[in-house]
Amino acid sequence: MAGMQPHDVFRFTSTTDPRLSPDGASVAYVVASVDEESGEPRSSIWSVPVDGSTEPRRLTFGPKRDATPRWSPDGRWLAFTSVRDGEVAQLYVAPVDAPGEARRLTDLKEDVHGPVWAPEGSRIAFTARDHDPDDDIDEPSRRPPRRIDRLQYRLDKEGWTARRTHHVWIVGLNDGDRPTQLTSGDYEDLDPTWAPDGSRIAFVSARHEDWDLTTTSDVYVVPSSGGEPKRLTATDGAYARPSWSPDGGCIAAFFVPGAFDDPRHARVVVVDAADGERSMLTEDLDRNCLPYPPIREPVWDDEQLIFAIEDAGTVPLFRVPTDGSSQPWRVSGQDGWVTGYDLAAGILVHTLTTPTTPSELFVGDRRLTDVSLPFGKEVELSEPEPFTAVAPDGAQIDAWVMRPVDFDEEQTYPAVLNIHGGPFTQYGQRFFDEFQVQTGAGSVVVYANPRGSSGYAEEWGRAIRGPVEGGPGWGSVDYDDLMAVVDEAVKRYRFIDPDRLAVMGGSYGGYMTSWIVGHTDRFRCAISERAVNDMASEDGTADLAGFFRGYVGAAAWEEPEAYARISPLSYAADMTTPLLILHSEEDLRCPINQGEQLFTVLRSMRRDVELVRFPAESHELTRSGSPTHRVQRF
Image 1: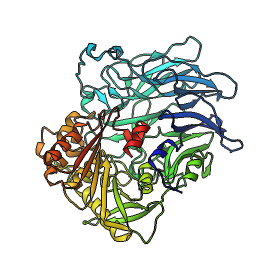
Image 2 (image 1 turned 90 degrees about the vertical axis):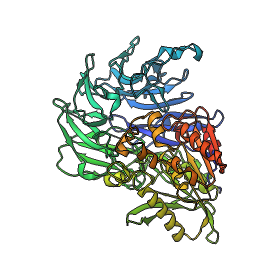
Image 3 (image 1 turned 180 degrees about the vertical axis):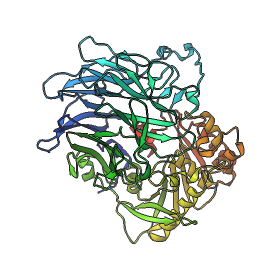
Image 4 (image 1 turned 180 degrees about the horizontal axis):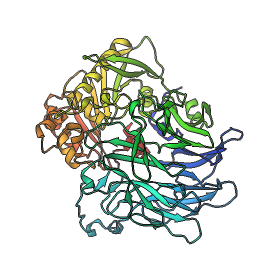
C-alpha cells in the first residue's frame, strides 16, 4: 500500500464544528472534503444520535459549502451558513426532523459569520462586513482611490477592510423579516453572544481612541433592540470569544494581558456583567487557552467552564469552576488534538484528530463517525515517534520523527526538518498532510517545538523576545534548539543519512529556514515559504504592520539596527544552500516582497535559487488554498 501522494489532497475527509441538540440526544457537525472534478472545497452538515443507535444522516445538500450548524433553543430548527447562489455565504434555517426546504434569511453582499440564536428562538445574531460600493465597479480603472486613515486597513484572506468592517446584525425568522444592523462605525465588532433574557448582546471590539495602533480590545454590551454599545472591560489587553453565563450575571471570555508584550498566554476569565470586574481562572495553569487555529468560546456547564488548551503538542479539553474554588483539570482522555467541542444536557462531545486520522467525532472515548475510514484503508500513513533533544544550555526540546512508508531498517534515507509557523504555535499530535506526503515520498520527517513555541510554560514562548529588551530575539535559542534536534535525530536514528538533510518551513518557519541557511551549510537544500526575510519591511507592509515591537521591544524606525540584526536578508551573502522560495502573490501577512527581496539578492550573487509564485493565493495556501495549487505545491 502506497503512502500519501499529492493528489490524495482530493481524497481525505474530516469532521468539524460539532453542535449538540438542546436535549443532548443528537449532534450536528460539518463534513469537509474536496471535490476532485471541480478542484473546489466542499462541506455539508450531518447529524448522528449521541448513543450511536442509527447511522449518521446528511442534513444539507448545498452544491458548495454548508457550515456553522446551530440548533434552535427548542431543537426544531437548524441555522447554518451556505454558499449556494453565487460566492457569498448567506444564513439559512431548515427544519430538523420535518420535511421542508432550507429557507434563506439573508441576502447580503458580504459573508455571514457565526450565527447565534436568541434565547427565545425567534431571532439570530451574526456578523458580516460592511460592503464597499466601490467594489461593485467592474472596471478597476474606474474605481476611486482608497483613502486610508488608520493602520489596520487590510487583512490576509479578506483583502481591504477599510470601509468593510465587521458588525453585528440580527434577523428574525418570520417571512419578510429583513436583517438589521445592530452596530456600526469604523470598528471590527466580533463574536456576539446573547444575554439569557435576550435583551442584550455582548461582543468584542476595539473602539477606544487610536484603536488601530494597539493590540487591545474589549467586551462591549449593546441592547438587542439597538442603541449605543457600552464598554464593559478596562482596555488592558485583548479579549476574544465571550460567552454569557446561564444566569446572566457574568461573561466568560479569553483574555491576553498587556499590549506589545508578545507572546502571552490567553487566559480564561469571567467578567461581571454589571461592573466589569474580572476574575482569572487559569493563571496557574500556565498554558495557552486559545489554541491555534481557534476553536470556540468557553462553554458553560452550570458553574463550570469547558475550554481547550495547548499542551506539549496536544490540544486537550479542560474544565474549571467559575468561582476559582479549584484548579482546572483535564476532561478529555485521548491523546491527540481537539478540533471542536460542545456540551448540552450534561453530554460532552468533541472532534479529535491524531497523526494518522483526520478529525472525527467522539462522545467520551466512543467514536461516532468514520468519514476518514476509506482514506485510511487505501493509504499507508506514518506514525510519529517522540524523542527529546538537549540544547547547548541544557534546555530540553520535544521532537518527533516519522519514518518513510515502506521503511527498511537496512537502508538510509534523506530527512526533512520541518519548522512550524507562528512562532507562538505548536507542532504535535494531529493529522498533517505535509508530513504524510513527505514520508510517502520516501523521506524521514523531523519536527519539534523549539523555544518560542506555544504549548509549554509562558517563559518558553517568550524566550525569543528581543533583542532590544527581554531576550535575544528571533534566530537565537530557537536556532540552537533546532540544530540540537537535528544532531540528536542523526545520532539516534541511524537510518537518517546525515549527508542528505533538507530544511523547510512556512511563515516564521520560512523565516527560520532562511536564517538557518544563512548560518550553516549542513543542509543539502532548503524551502523557505511565505517567509519573513526582512523584519523592517515586513513590519511596514504586512496586514499586522507596526506590531513587531511586541516581540522586538521597539519599533523598526526606533531600532533599525536591531531589526537588521535579526533579519535573514542581512546574511544572504552567507547563503550557499540551494534554496527554493515559495510565496503567494496575495499574501498580506508576509507580503510577496519578502520572497522577492531574498530572491533578488541571491540571484544577483548567482546563487542556486528559484522563486515560485502562486497567483490568487493568500498566506493560507497550504491550509485553505485552492486544492489544485496545493497539489502543484506538493
